[in-house]
Image (tube, rainbow, N blue to C red):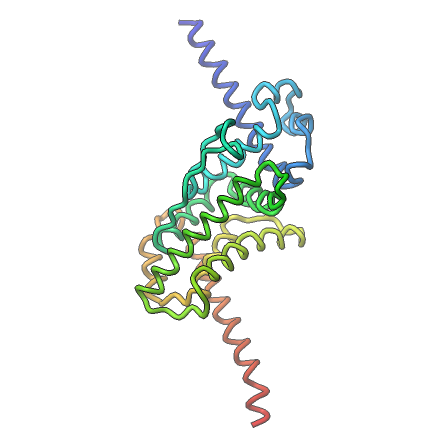
Length: 264
């Protein structure tokens, strides 16, 4: 009995240490990029020895794959399983977005999870850096971006077909714009030394989606009716962002029309 308790205790401590290493690695990747730290730096961040880090993660690539997998588990859109024998180190699944409402609620759920700030920053840093074919995450992010584009294009096409909406461009082009806005917003924030607030970031992104898709009022109301209580704050932020962007667009349109009125 005592031996079993000791074994369970040792396992729990080991799991806790592994989680601490992984959490710290995600923050370090978000702060410095994959090539900006060593396993010794990681050990110092956690407060453990270099051999202790290697015991749980024998290489930086092992840490990278676990960090990517953890992000995907948190985001709950893309299925990946670590497989050292597979290309890129993962068995990759597809992305299922569903309706805009389902997708938006999923992003709100992601935003309130512990560690979401670092997960978003990590994802965007790796997305930008892994455009190089020599980056160890290149295969994953190339496939992920292609899958996200296909899923968003299908979602937007369904919306256009059902609502007869005029979006001013093709569904695929708009899908690419949204992907670039998502990643570009984080990169811009980092250049401006702004902290990443997952709740504010997701709210702003969803407000941009509403604006670019020209979503009718009943869609926004349907979203509100589908929002679980735990993400009500993120929904409230989204509504505020929608109002701000609508007001800004109206003011810009009025300013553009003013010279024409004066000339006339």
